[in-house]
Every structure is written in structure tokens, then in C-alpha cells.
Image (cartoon, rainbow, N blue to C red; front, top):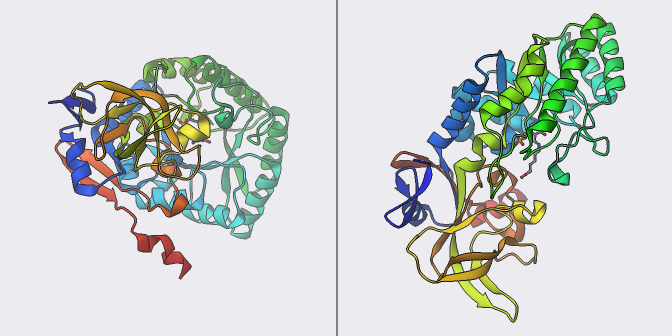
Length: 412
Ligand code: LLP
């Protein structure tokens, strides 16, 4: 049975009714299924079991400590983009030797702390960054492991805001530049070249660009080896999409098949950085109806969650399925489901059919496990919502609701 399902006319997460959780912790709240997260981790590990592969979970997708702990227990490493993410991952028990550090703008203090930690690799995206890492490592008498992140100029065929493998974006190095930097690494005793990689985008449902990237990176790695460079791994980034509406994302097996062929020819270890696919469909955002409101053009369902809790609909025009937590079939109504924030962009879904709702009724937004709580803010001075992890018929609050006091605590 899927983690989120209907039972006795009610929406359940595993063996708990969403209404039970909402009654206990209030709304809005994020509810995650532990078994769903673990199933995703295991299916990734199984799909790549035929080849030496280290999946490094992209912490940015959902960085709650309890969720990180569950993921790292399965053997995953971490893909991080800030010192904050590194400290979270370490607290959650990740092996430092399984951390890769991505990002175009790593600060010197962040690099220094990752050097102290002894991570697996810095994914380097510019020559300026390479120089900073080299001098910080030299000052400390260390040798920094670096992997060159290439921008292969491949269109991932996804939302432009999360497309990262084109020359029009800030990411990665052009191949010729990366080749020159590999040469530079060879001359600098404080650096060691350990890998090459790329990350072409997110919510990718068509495997063709992923295959193309795998082929290009494998050829690039082979070219470097011909020049006498030694490498440990190829990192193909994250990006595998999930089903929000009608997308047909690849299964983990078809994803593995799509990239392993090329990588196998190099014999190099493979790193992948899945984020969304691990947690996206393992979480929902539960909200209560505040009131309904009719205008000459629209029928609004105003709920207590808002764009500060889930910004994806307004930020990426993304679709999240919205359902009533009580599944008894009454007459259907068409609603624009919106939050209370003072922006027209504060919406969760437009023209959605739902059973006619009354104040206090519960609705939930599916596929909110990735880039939901992680992108939440306090906009409109709204305390951030709690997070709950369900395990069978039990649950644990893994992040408490913020209080009003929390809102101004740092300003006193
Ligand atoms: N590796 C790197 C270097 C990345 O930049 C990202 C995501 C990932 C891995 C993980 O990608 P995933 O497997 O989750 O697709 N906020 C947006 C998504 C931004 C993704 C940023 N980078 C959204 O809500 O759709």
C-alpha cells in the first residue's frame, strides 16, 4: 500500500489518519512517511548495486535532522552547498568522507571548515574558487580533494529556473577551462584531482539529457586520463524528477540503465546527488480551511498554509495535487486554493475540484517533501510550521512549530 492512501473515508500516512496528527499538532504541518523515504533510498541503492556507486543525498531538498539521520543510516553520503548544510549532515551522522561540497560561491570560511572536516571532495566551479581552495589548504599544510564541475551545455528540458547545465547559467566550467584547471591542479601540491562531474538541472523526467551528460562526462574523464590525470570518480549530480501531476519520471532502474552504460566504460566510481526523488513524494503539507470567499470571477478556498510554507506553486508554476483529508464524496466545487498572505502570488492551486469545503476542514498538498519546509520563510511574520515523521501508527514531531516569540527572538 502506498504510504499516503485513503482508508475509512480518511487520508492516511502509513497507519495514521492525517486528521489525528492535525488535531494533535495543529495546522499547517508537514507530514512525512519514514517508510516512503527508506523505500526510495533502498530502491536507489538496489538500482545501482551492480556498479560501485555512492549516492550523496542533496541536503537542500529537505534538511531536517531526523530525515537526514534516516537517509544516512542507509549508507548515503551528502551533497552540501553551505557550511550550515555540512554541520547538519555531520550532526545527523554522515561519514565526512562521503560529503561532496557543491556551489558556485563557497566562501573562504566555509571552505576552511570543510577542509577541517576532511570531506570527500569540493566540486569546483571556477578558477577563482580553485585558487582559494589551493591557498587555504596550503596555509594549513593540507591537500584538498577537488572535483571539476563541468557545464556540458545540455538542456535538461525542465523549468528554466532549475536548469543548470546550459552556458546561460552561472554553473560549472566549460570543458576547455576544466581541462586547463586539471593541469593547474597537477602543479599545485595542496590540491589533488579526484573527480569530474556535472549537474544539469532538477525535476528531469526525460532520461535522454541524463544519458547525454553521462556520455559527455565519461568522454571528458577519459580525455583527462589520456593526459595523465588520475581520477577516482564521476559525479553525475541529481535531478531525477518525480510525479506531481501526470509526469512519467524514470524508475530508478531506468535511470541507472540510462547512465551506467557510459560510466562503466571508464571504470571510475560513480557519485549521484539525488534530492527530490528521495523525499519529494514522502511528504504532504496539511492545512485547514479558514473560509471560503466568492468574487465575481473566482471561488476561493482560503487555507491556513501559504506561500511561506510551500513556495513552489508561485515560484515555479509547479503543480501540487490538492486533496481533502476526508474523502466522503459530497458535491464538488471548483476552487482557487490560496493562503492568507498579502500577495496575489500566494496560491497553491488554481481551478481545482474539491468536495465543497467548510471552515475547519482539512486539505493536504501532495509531493511536498522536497523543497517545501526547506524553502519555508517567516514572510508576513508567520511562524514556520512543524514537521512530523510517521512510522507505522506512531509519529514524532521532528521540528516544533515556531512560536511568536521565535519570530523576534534574534532581534532583541
Ligand atoms: N546536486 C546539485 C549540485 C544541485 O544543485 C541540486 C539541486 C541537486 C544535486 C539535487 O537535485 P534534485 O535531485 O533534487 O533534483 N527548489 C527547486 C529545486 C532546486 C534544485 C537545486 N539544485 C524546486 O523546488 O523545484
